[in-house]
Length: 79
Image 1 (cartoon, rainbow, N blue to C red):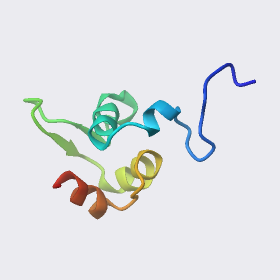
Image 2: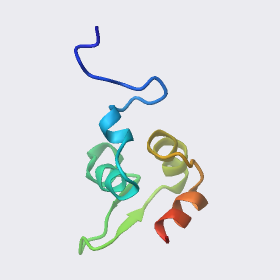
Image 3: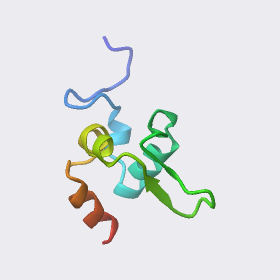
Image 4: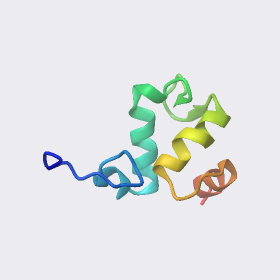
């Protein structure tokens, strides 16, 4: 038994995270200290910045989102 935690085989994250909406996932990622060198809030807290686009595209996008290209993420942000 896995102790009751339901993990998807294709993702290291619980189903609850994978079922989140796009904005919820983004807020979750921004709250994770492990990604603070890749993505973070600007000082005023009203916008975020991606510090390391290559790591964002290779590590974060494929783990949390269906799209794994930065251009797809950017397009989704502007919808």
